[in-house]
Length: 101
Image (cartoon, rainbow, N blue to C red; front, side, top):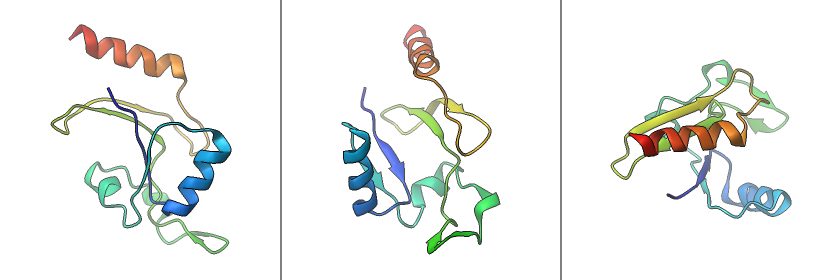
C-alpha cells in the first residue's frame, strides 16, 4: 500500500508544508484540479472565492480515498467542515475492512 497526498497547491507550497508538518509521504500538486475533478472532490462552495491573494476555486473536500491499483475507489473517509479530519483509527479500520474482502 502507498500513501500520497494531493492538493491544488503548488509544489513549493506543498514542500514547505511537508517540511513544517514532517510529512514523509509524497504530496502531489494538482494545480488545475484535474484529479480533484476526476474524483468529484471539488468543493463547489469555494468556487469564485478568495483568501487574500489565494484563489480557492480548486479546493477539494478534505478527506481520504482508498484507491486500488486500477484506480477504483474502495473506501472514502470524509467529514463535514473543511477544518475537520477523520482520525487515524478510522483510517486503520477502513484499511482493515478492505483486507477482509
